[in-house]
Image (cartoon, rainbow, N blue to C red; front, side, top):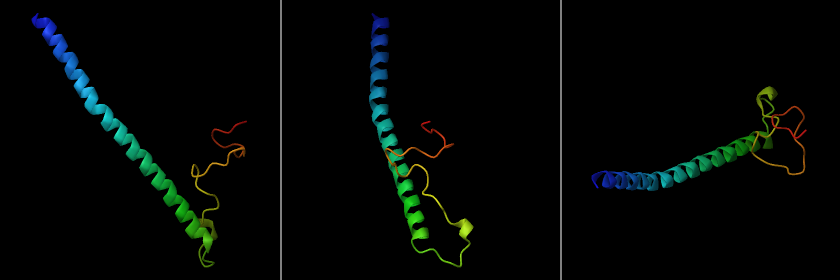
Length: 88
């Protein structure tokens, strides 16, 4: 009888801990996705700010020439050849 109570108690403890950990993991993933989205928006804003009215006195080699990777998706347009994860 004592062994059965111990096993049931341990099982309930595992369920309670899992019930507390799962919402924490979901919230952490949401925060990580939010941070990634904010970073992409920041990179797009910096790209737009630097290329809207570029200063002719600045070194042209330091300006970005392409939109940062992973910020927009052009569906139906194949990616550049030689890029990582290209379609063909």
